[in-house]
Amino acid sequence: MSATIRTETGSTHAAFLGVGAYRPSRLVPNSEVVDAIDSSDEWIQQRSGIKTRRFAGEDETVVSMAVAASQKALDAAGIDAQQVDAVIVATISHLIQTPSAATAIAHALGTAQPAAFDISAACAGFCHGVALANDMVRGGSARHVLVIGVEKLSDITDPTDRGTAFIFADGAGAVVVGPSDTPGIGPVVWGSDGEHYDHIRTPDWRDVLAAGGGMPNLSMKGNEVFRWASYGMAKVAQQALDRAGITADQLDVFVPHQANNRITDTMARALRLPDTVRIARDIIDAGNTSAASIPLALDRMIADGEAKSGDLALLIAFGAGLAYAAQVVTVP
Ligand SMILES: CC(C)(COP(=O)(O)OP(=O)(O)OC[C@H]1O[C@@H](n2cnc3c(N)ncnc32)[C@H](O)[C@@H]1OP(=O)(O)O)[C@@H](O)C(=O)NCCC(=O)NCCS
Image 1 (cartoon, rainbow, N blue to C red):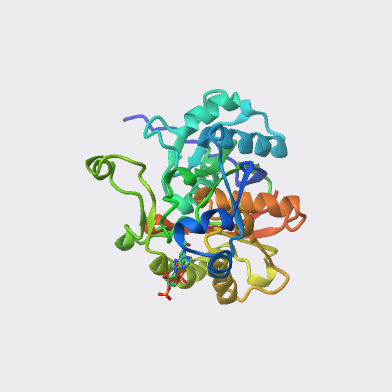
Image 2 (image 1 turned 90 degrees about the vertical axis):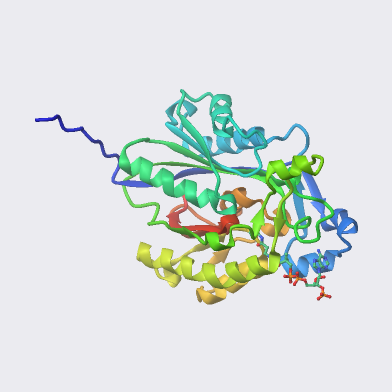
């Protein structure tokens, strides 16, 4: 008789144990981007909600910003770097194809050689990372997982492109996911609509080189993405609530990906969120930081007292792919 493989399970429940964020020092108001795209502060605010954003300097890299955010998340969780079993980094702007940013971040944090890898799910990346971390802690493959969303999109945004130059920005956010006595992360609702694979994308490197070089800048079919996100994502968010057994009036906080305030408004209306639900509006002075936007927004809400420990928060992230993921979590 052949031997049977022994399996392991982890904690019954997992939760966010701590949140941290890093915002680059340079504030970039709309007035700084409008000339190159023949736009105005008024147009940008009206169409997106953005007043200002932050661009990282030369010394603020994907790795350094992620390390700073992660250290704050570890401190908030009361977890030493040596206790981290896995580091998951959601990013599309680490411009070194290999190795992953995660291995460098893990090393810089002083961890004890954890599993470390990057995931590519664009603006939906953070919620994908949370879903993986939840399953890893409950499945027994890790006890403490650092989930990081980090972007330096200013590197891959064409300042003369009217459709993207005023939207994308830089920053980092992180959470520690670990064991919990009570459920702290609800079932993920995730998926992808690959039929619209090229609605938001960077070019093939080979085409960039054939055209004489330059950066692989993002391009976006803004109208199509707007419609898809505004009308499709509320359904996904509702499914995440239903799967977690939470009703809109039991919710305390709504933290959607900070893509555009008008998308957030449409989703909030479709979900019939009562006035008591605090809604993240970090985009106003952070811009769209892709994978970093949800942990940045959540960190701000905790700092401002808008999200309190034990509050129920609905997270939903969506973007290139078109990929999406949503779950209900408790605020640490
Ligand atoms: C990008 C976005 C703000 C553009 O807003 P919009 O209302 O769709 O704008 P449109 O492309 O329909 O253009 C409307 C008008 O504004 C003009 N316009 C477009 N870009 C402009 C700019 N940057 N500044 C000023 N005017 C602009 C257009 O020329 C057009 O003018 P017209 O009516 O005279 O023809 C919007 O499509 C959007 O938010 N998309 C989704 C973005 C997103 O979430 N991305 C990330 C997903 S992860």
